[in-house]
Image (cartoon, rainbow, N blue to C red; front, side, top):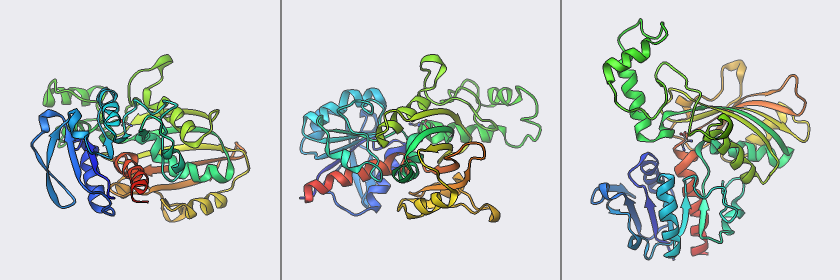
Length: 354
Ligand code: 2RA
């Protein structure tokens, strides 16, 4: 039978992309319920070409639901994912709440699809978008060459911080445009933003237009940002390498959507650029864009709105044997969030129709 699907957080940045993705992939669901906070209840939103009334989050909305995809803040997931599971739905959760719980699989369908079947709590987690941006590529390389170490710098888009993140970048760019002297003196960008935008709240701890901000997420021990620790812990769990060495620096950049990562990856075995090309060309969800002589490499503006993981700038590290340096781009709202959750839902939906 066709499973009933609930999309929880249907009105957010990821929820909007999720409705689009579900509407454009194979139609495998019976009913689709849209769920959001009480504030959005009653709104009509399109999915599969039909307008559907948004329902307020409540225990009863999960009655009769087979699969519930959650894209809501951590604290909302902590409260409501167990409610959905208890009411019989298999919950696919995008938040950070359950990802590192040993009883909850953390799944990237290209890398560890089998893990989705082992879900004693009825919960499957989907990774953070920063981790996801490189997982299809790193999983493919790991399966042949054995990954040992990752040193990563991220270039994260503002929509990773939701609708408010994109809105803030557009507001700042508008406020700064027109004055061709701004950005040339320390403090002038902050001053102009203060004059034009006043005390309007920003999701970022520093101006994001005309800037890069070496901070993403919340403060954790010893000065680490939560995004950096997620990259480490989640990569280990997804790839099944508990002792994978990972060090990351996460940076927010003035890009609307699509995260990029500069990756320094060390393998058990010697690996050449040609080896990496062969493996990545064969990986169905990876697009190789690596022809530096002709200026071919991925950038966010060429990648945004598409599904694959794009890889370029692959180089054999000069001073590090068994190590490659490469650059990865992935749409943080699609593969980084909604698409991965939709793909997990499809794995689970297949159990209903099998
Ligand atoms: C960000 N990775 O980019 C986060 C979103 N979960 O802010």
